[in-house]
Each structure stands twice: as C-alpha cells, then as structure tokens.
Length: 253
Image (cartoon, rainbow, N blue to C red; front, side, top):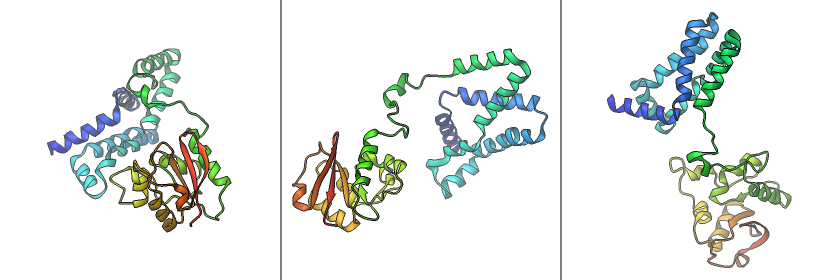
C-alpha cells in the first residue's frame, strides 16, 4: 500500500512540474466552493475534480489500472481533471467580482509562477518552428518530393528513425512499412526493415529484399552513413538530395 502511494505521488510530481499550476488549481477549487452558486458548475468543476483526484490517489484503483491497463499511462488520468477550465473559470469570476484588483492579482501570480520555456534546462531541447506544421522542414521537402514522383496508386516509403514521428503528421496518405511504434520499446516488435534503416552501416542488398517484400518504392537514408555496397547494384536510383538525407527509388518492386 505504502509503495503504491509513493508511486502515485511520484507520478503526480512528474505531472505537476514545479507545482505552481496545481497549487493555483487547488486554490481555484476552494474559491469555487466558497463563491459559486450555480449547482451545475459546482458539480462539474468542484465535485467532479474532487472525485477524479480521489480515484487517482486511491491505491486500489492504481493497482487495478496498472494490472489491467498500462502502468506507463497512469499519469494521463490527470488530463481528465479540468485544471485549465477550473483556473480560467475562477480567474474570470475573480476579475468580474473584483475588477482591477482581481486582474492585478492574477497577473502577479502568473508572473511569479511562470517560466520562459526558452530558458533554463529546456532551452537546449526546444527549436523554433520552421513552418506552419511545426515539424522539420526537411521532412516536408522530402515527402513533397516523394509525392511528386510517385508512380504507384498507393505509395510506400521507408524513413529513418528520426523522421518517423513527423511523416504522417504531414501526409497521412503515405504508407510506411513500420511506424513510430518502433521508437518505443513497450510497443515495438522485431522488424528487420527498421533494423536495417536504423543500423550504422547501410546494406542495400538487404534493403532491396525488404523493399521488394514490403512493396516499398522509396527509401530515405542518412547520406552520412557508410554503405556496405553500391545502391545502384541492387535496383536503387538516387532521386534527390535534401541536406544530409538521400531519397532513393527502388525499381525492383
């Protein structure tokens, strides 16, 4: 029991980050409990939140969830708690009832509790958006190039691991022989095609076999990786180069 409680609180601490948002949310619940007169709003924002939080922190519920669902997704239950809606509702009421004083109080709280995502530990992990899709521009250029040169009614293409999370966000009509599940050890199963595409040495003889078996017409590879053999000897033709990535057409399908 104590061990499960520790795990639950660890998950909560990972979800809540610095904790300021959840502190504000709990304060908002108190404010709603004291000032809200509408029964429907009380039921949804106050009682609904309390019930959900009790379930999330209840060890038996945690045990049933990790046993029959998935331990790694337990933190997502916090998405069910209307944190943003509760904060917005309480803040709007505070401004409505106390006008300038309420507005200044909220601005001060947000200023003290906020942090620029482009500073601190996160600064090295965040890139400015390159386009409206907010995905790497080279992925867009490569997919556009493939679609402009497709010769089959349904186009299959294989991409390196670092592009898998972006391709179908941009164009869901492109078929892949493996998807982003390969990046997660909990979901992935053995896939020889992916193993070859992610290996440090590109073997185009094996890649040709995988393309033929999976009806893959295009492959995108990191041009900086060493090649065990010559792509053209196994039915590949270099179609285009986009920065450090090469697009090959396989004519053996």
